[in-house]
Image (cartoon, rainbow, N blue to C red; front, side):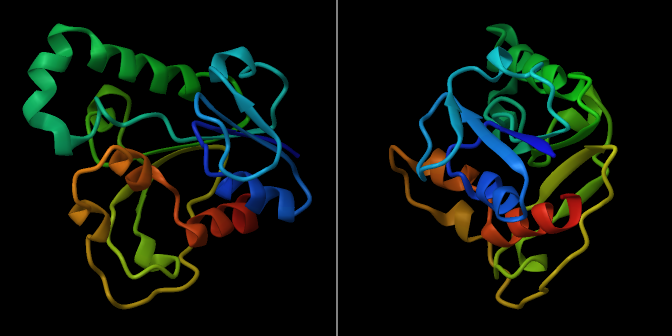
Length: 183
């Protein structure tokens, strides 16, 4: 199966699908952190290249409820509309199997309610981070390793230049579950 992992620089989900024998490629405006098939650039350049599955992690900067206090400003200057438009571009790409990930935010009203909300602690990581999944042609993920130690560690990171990048990474247990269950 040909799998496009959109808006992923870490290579975690890409490599999980490759390990299961799939032809997977990640794509991000950032270069990949791990060697492997990766397109550095705008996903729109390759979105319609005959993929069987799209797993997308569209930027949440202007969509997440955690930034609600800045919504008015982001609406006024068009950033929020751009974020919604990009999310919807992926959702409406026509690829047969689609999973889009984003935190709790405005896509529940701008698009539709998510099909599922998962937590890292359901997949072997003792942390909380509510993660919404909008699914097309795919089943809900089944938890693989429920663990204790449920803390919001990612939200406690100190300010830094790469804080947003670190907070956006997919947990390995979730990447593995996606490849095992959707591959």
